[in-house]
Image (tube, rainbow, N blue to C red; front, side, top):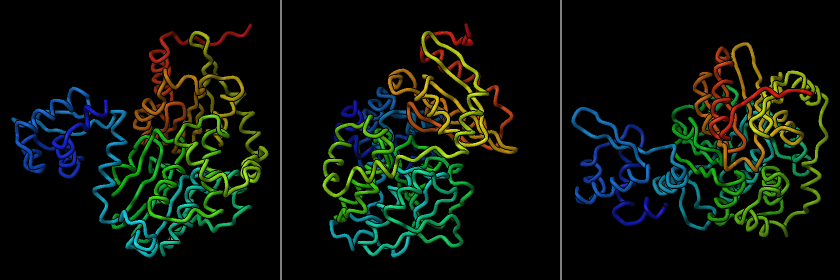
Length: 417
């Protein structure tokens, strides 16, 4: 399919023109032809091919047809990333000399609340690598670190701040797709923001100046590795440790790896002691998380679709970990809410074998809007955060109907014999 989208010089030129002149509000075919220096007839033909592949959308505005990207197309993130990289090559140079990588001397790396090993491991690896290019980066975790991430820092301590008073001009946002995951942190408009993430593009992507986003990657760490090595950064033992820990954690201790992961693991393996990585990630369940798991079990509503068990639950904290625990224990799909006075967080997990049938990221993108926030994620792991908890029942019914459609069956309450 990709060869139908990018298959000729004219198509590439038209896509670049659309990216530069109409990626947000769209533009007309005539303007695309002028901007891409392509004959109108050729531009018209290429637009027709893009339409056939459902890669673009067309809407009428008066007598004009407005062309824009179809952001829901599965190849959109990859092609958008390629176009972003080229568009921003004035900011990030492709030379292999580390000292010429960035024009800036200071930067900030922000990770999501309760930052997991992929987020914090990628952030530290990036910061240590940038240090070789004389770019000094502080790491900002506005919502603190997970217990696993704290254990990682016992091996190689690194200062992490949970408060920031002054933002530098260059800001990186790692492993995060929506503003709600930044725990209230607000980045000034004058900052140059770069997102590096392996989730489906969320609201942050539309706000960023540059995006390195690849939902097909199992971890943000592999994107960071590619970025560092392409810039000629030396992968030290410390950088390798954090990258490996991030990959191990987000692939479920190598249960979900692909060829891309294996290639990177093979390059890192001689620099790290895997026993140290596994030991750092193998944390005991703290008391508060145990209580959250127990409350989650007590409030569980269980349903079935054919032979699959779907559970809905509510907790006061650790919603993602409770959902994951239910998946590893007995459920095929788990949806867990954390409802505050003026907030709501919903975490969903599905077993890996269901990824060919369900795409939780799609339904949760819409749910984010229902709760006046944002949502997204992966096919078998997604979440939504918002400020309106009044639509909880509507959200639950939407999820049920989606699962009925995706799994081709009726959802029924689970009967206990």
